[in-house]
Length: 544
Image (spheres, one colour):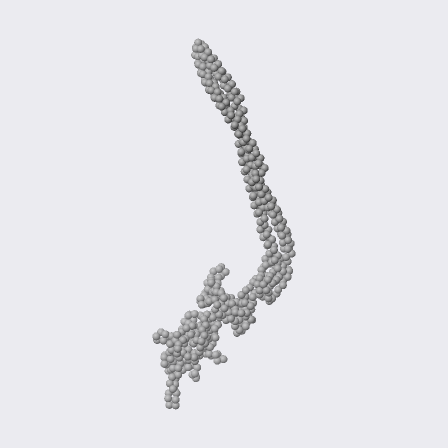
């Protein structure tokens, strides 16, 4: 019974394994799901082989082999992206002035600060001149106003401190005169105090006597009126006589009171009136002096505020800002390169308004690729990882790059939300090493990011590794056993199970390690149905 596993080769004789290794360098790893699919395919193929062997009746199975050789094993992810400059600048202008001259073309290399275009700045120059003149005038006026205010304030402060402020001097003089008169009137009043007190006592005595006689007269009048009403003539006559006596006594008391009043007024009025008037004048002078002090303080405060306003008047920040704005606008009429690089776009046109985007400058020597990495690969990616970049436009020529940036968040949609129609993607940048020749900004490129690389290791296809009875990983080496002689039995090929330690994995290959492995060993590419010590033949050596 024959067991046949067919190995494919291309017209140039390239084996399936060699082609697999080449494809692996530019193929994204598909993860464990792909392994499961491959394993299922192996099992199905093994079942087919088993039934073909039974049907043919052959006893020696036929296997495909992989020859062990130490080499490089690379695990990588494949991406596509577009080239852009590491450093680029878009030169904008917000000036409405027209473009007078465009001094560069697309492809010109410029240095930072080099003039790219010139706008018409004549009107701005005129406005700047007027603003400068107005600013100088305002500054001079503010300076003179402040000097005058300070001088006025200092003069008044000096007059107040020296006591020579006119209004306050007048008020103090009036107060001093009023106080002198008041002192003299009070002294005169005190000197006549006894005489005035006696006149007051005499006046008070006669006032009380007049009051008393008035009461007696009123009573006599009441008695007379009652007798008249009763019609008793004798009683009425007697009452009339008493009334006459009381009236006479009242008249005498009133005359004496009036004389005492006149005597008192003659002595009392001049002294008291003078004293009272002097005292009132003194109080008024004191109030006038206080008012003069308050007015002086108010005037001083007002002059101080005037000085402060003069100081504020020297703040010409708004005019200074307008002057600086005009200066900037005039300077912006000379459009300069903000960075060194190559002019890759020119939008400025002579005679057209010089606003908006005018130029694009990019560094064509420092390039990077902007791409997107799916979420199941981004966890393996790290800044600094090596990348190989190729462009269809340059054939097989490759360029070295390094991962320079991995976005911390996934790509967003227009609303700022994570795109959910597929798996999340993360924007990634790969900076090219050196100044790559032939690559141009905007080119679409393919690139492989090397996640892991091992040198000088043995590797076999995933299908070559199986599990032994003890659960450990094994591969089957094909070894010649027996001897060939004229009279002996011929040698034959035997599959021997060798326990191995697996290591790094790629999309199609897996690293194997064992002290028993040697360069040139032949390994069964698919050990399905093999047992340790089973005789086998190599599929490619069979004829027919």
